[in-house]
Amino acid sequence: MAGTGRADGFSTWAEQAQQRLYRQGVLLTGDPHSARDLVQATLVKMYLAWPRIDTPGAYAHRTMVRTFLEGRRREQRERELHRAVDVRPSDTDHAHALTVRAALAELAPRMRAVVVLRYWEDLSVEQTAAALGCSTGNVKSTASRGLDRLRVLLGDAFAERVTTVTEET
Image (cartoon, rainbow, N blue to C red):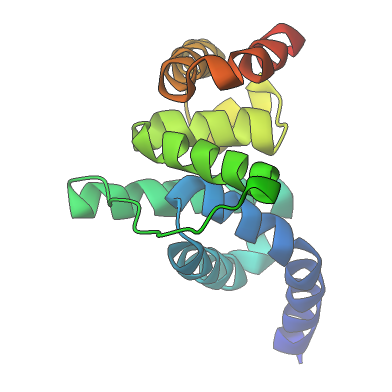
């Protein structure tokens, strides 16, 4: 019956965390379908390791990012964003979100992971470093370069929003 307790605890945690993991997955992959696959792979790995996991949130971040980066290395190139979107004038927020998602897709996978964890998931530098298995200095420099790259990719229309995020860190 020990397996039942494990399954119950995991099921409860996974149900509460699923939407947050999905949003993080969409930002990492740039694609809702790939994000679902990434969340599924992350949850499977977590279920298997559940008895050994002390901090599920941190473990989930680390597992998701590592699974994402492993997939990117296997593919050996970035997947192009395949979306035809009918953007109407009233869809400004949706259009901004798609523009930002496309810009994130242009970042190198590790840089994208740092930007998503720091500024979307709002993890501290230390938490991001732990999730990625790197130094805090590496997180700071990668985040800075990532924001600089996003400024270039997003242009003047988004310069104010990105500058605000930078000033808050």
